[in-house]
Length: 137
Image 1 (cartoon, one colour):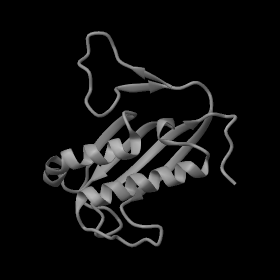
Image 2: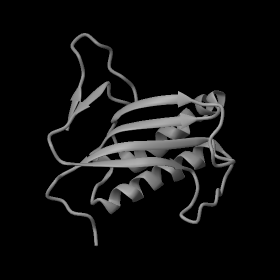
Image 3: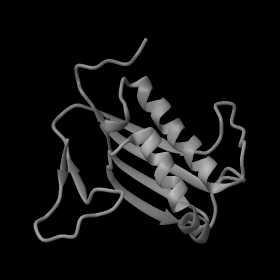
């Protein structure tokens, strides 16, 4: 996986402008909200929901034998821009805890609502898992 950074462009913070990947197994992860495996929200706050949603993405990815560094694209949907901006330091810590210094191509989209209440954030991702790696059994 290679980061695409055009010459002369300012370095992005917290994402990559683009990622190129050699052939492998494509893994598409549906939008994950900040609820537990039993579909219960344990918090109505943005940062804990983001952490749970990110953990959910990584749990689904692990089923394909992948890990955080295999994610090449992520879209984040959020219902509250002021809450997101206020939580950025916490979100950065959460990101580093689960993803390290890996920053895929990302989009941040603010929406009026999510299907699952009281969800504030939903993450979907695409990963490329080494074709020789098989799902954990």
